[in-house]
Amino acid sequence: MKIIIGLFFLHIIKSDLVEGIVDTTVILRKRITLGCMYSGSETIVQCSWFKFNGSFEEPLCAFHNTYGKYISEKYKGRMSFVFENISSDMSITLTETSKQDIGIYFCYIALFPLGTVKKVIAVQEDDFGKIMPSSHQTFTENSTITLNFQYTLEGDVKKVTLERFTDVKMDTIVSCEKLMNSRTKATYGFDFINRILVDCSILHNITILIYQAASTDEGLYKSYFNAGSQNQTIVVNMRLKKGISPLYTVAVMYGGSLVIIIAIISIAVICVKRKWKHKSKETIPPTTSSTYNVEYQPRSGTMYGEHIYANLSELKS
Image 1: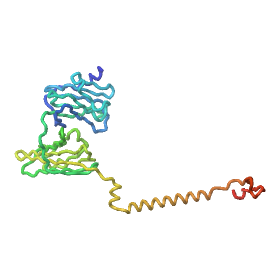
Image 2: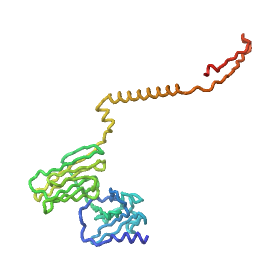
Image 3: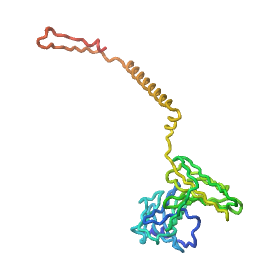
Image 4: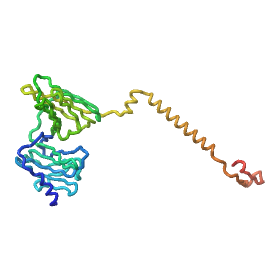
């Protein structure tokens, strides 16, 4: 236990400000889940959770691949890992929450051989308000989908922020910003690294590619264009429908032809099997000839009193 506590407190450092973007914002409820899932292939060695407390990071819990888990005394009884064993999902759940739980949380994942990655999560009391979609778009599950956001006002766009809203949380997808050398920089949210591709080369026309879209990708996608005095917000309500299997698609396209083809193939297979079976019987060598004398005894009262003998040697051969 002393070893894991020592590893745990290595992350307690002075912090004058929260660097980077907030990856996820969660609305305060009596029970909340702070998600932290790593999608890479590296080996997870340890996961540590902290809460930003103005000037330092307050420890919550830690989970080590060898030494097990540790929970701070302050959070024992109302904090738990979503999965009891270390895995790619190191999310935690807080119960019996109060306003004291509002703030910024950090999830550190120590990876071998990459190093440490961090996710920033904010818990706030107020909800996100009513968000009205500009358009509705429906796609098929497990396909690569494209969402396009185009700035239509006058002005030079300097920064674009893309976010996804669901009922109780908001995820930052990417922040695209113009640099001094006229190039653009894209900073992805933690949950979207290596999952999507965003073209930020032209800030007034942003395109998102989502690979193998799943039901968890549904929601309101909000694009905020910052162009000084001429700012613009575009919201797309993205939904997914169940995909159609390739076999069903072929059947619909070619109608009864597919059924006919299957029937022909089935008949051909049956004919070949029968022919092969018949040929196998013909090639079986005859057995050694033997003589079987079978004696039939007539029933009493029959008109034939003599014995009947049958020689089956010829019949067997």
